[in-house]
Amino acid sequence: MDTSITKLIYIGKQISSWNVSLRNGELKIFFKDFVNLAPEYRGPWKLVNRVLDKGFLTISPAELARLLETGVKKYVLSLIENIKVNYEQLPESFYMVIEEVSRTWSQIKSNFASIRGKIEVEKIPGLFPPCIQSLIDSLKAGKNLPHSARFALASFLLNIGYSVDEVLEVFSFSPDFREDLARYQIEHIAGLRGSRTKYSPYKCDNMRSLGLCRWQCRGIRHPLQFFFRAVRGRKPEVKEVG
Ligand code: SF4
Image (cartoon, rainbow, N blue to C red; front, side):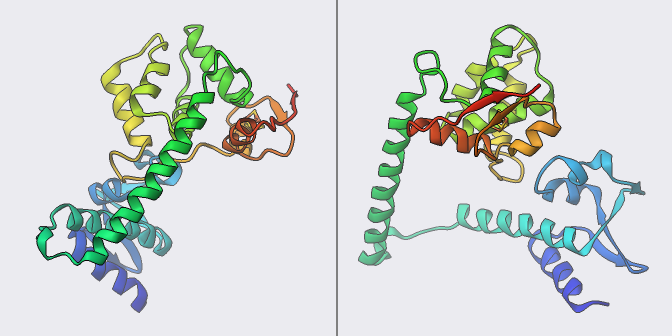
């Protein structure tokens, strides 16, 4: 048996007591562990796209390593959450680091706040790329968006600093809006649930292949790139192509 695979299985069992083993040269994992550790819920990571045999599915060594990555992340987070600290015993140098981190974080937050001030889309049109603006317009017109469009919009807004409640507000225009469901999905995209991964919006290439882009934005490969350029006053040239 490949020693690196054996080690991965061993680590997995130690930290998450997951049910994974090598049988007849194939890596098998119990479906609940796969779902629990999947880094994302699309493509090959969706259970519906896998073959299940008596509750187990076959994974590749690379997938095993990726699942383990999520498992280790969760494990470390759980250790941090359960840690008991005696604050009186912490050295002064530790507090100095905390102060430095807090100062930097406040600066980042205030930078975001100043950008957010500019995002009054109604007042300053054009900061959002046309793909995102058209999704917002569709929602406001009372149209239901497909799943991929919802993901694109929510992940974009979260990545430019919108809070979960603010994204919910945008989605409240949707005719089939259900706050509990929408909140769950948005929190998942924001990395507050599940694998705790904050998702990035699709790249332009993906937006095109999903039918969410019919424009060419000069020099832009990612909708976030469009936004940050526009905020700096260098709005990319846009051409509708179809
Ligand atoms: S080129 Fe990119 S940023 Fe521009 S509309 Fe298409 S997906 Fe959006």
